[in-house]
Image (tube, one colour):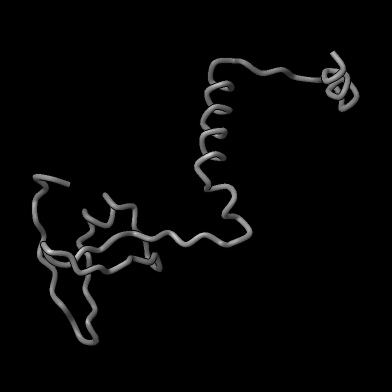
Length: 95
């Protein structure tokens, strides 16, 4: 966020730091979310890390997300079909 207004936080007991609410909102961080803490040449970087259950990780792959975006666009543009029954649906594959 180049040019963003700086915020000041205070280090509390046990190293706890409260991230200001406007920054939490901008970073989509909520209670219990994880952040990666990295030392850089410029200082300390906090990087949001959303942890995903291993059984759900496939959904967040780039290829799956691209397909989800394409499906959403198809729905938005009306490129869909409705079938009266499962048999009608399966017959659609025979064409």
